[in-house]
Image (cartoon, rainbow, N blue to C red; front, side):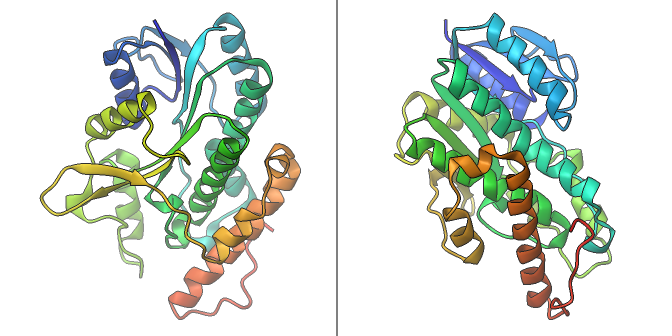
Length: 288
């Protein structure tokens, strides 16, 4: 029986992916801050993934005890939402650690010391579209994670990146509450909420029989139809052009990665402010 590790298995897409893998014959090991024994064959408690050092040690132990892992799924996350003027360096680092740096660090460990067949990372619709300033640091982390996965494939590593649609979670709904009364709009129409179980099954089927050479995917929902998945082509806007110049070594140098992410964040927020016809030339974020 093939084994899969799911990091962030206790809710949302993590739960759905765990169930879909289990239903498709995998022995599933969930890494979660909360118990998911009803979903996975094993549940191992972990710290917050934003604590890179501690989580890295925990993940290393799991890999050493399970040297026959087929698939590792990185789906954990918890975004900090703030307006740009309130955004601190600590907030920025938290989002970057949760959605990018911890994943990069553990994938580096997999590449060096493991025979894992499939590596799975997750983006969202904001991995290939920019959003307003409230999600800017999250968008930057997801853009970079997409590029990192692309580079892994170019190196011959079987890595998948799925830009999944938003499901109706407490966090997703809080975005709408947070934007209430501002110029920005809830980034999703009510009809576009996704059912994680439906999307997860499509993902697991794709892992078994890939249809895309670059292993980058996005989901679409046309009026009156179910969710469908297609290959994601990288759009060459200014931000993507910058990312295309990055190498795996850039990602594996932690301090350099933070500097790259900060530059992209400033570019993205300035672009959003310009589109809203606001002054952006004097923008100096607190994270810098």
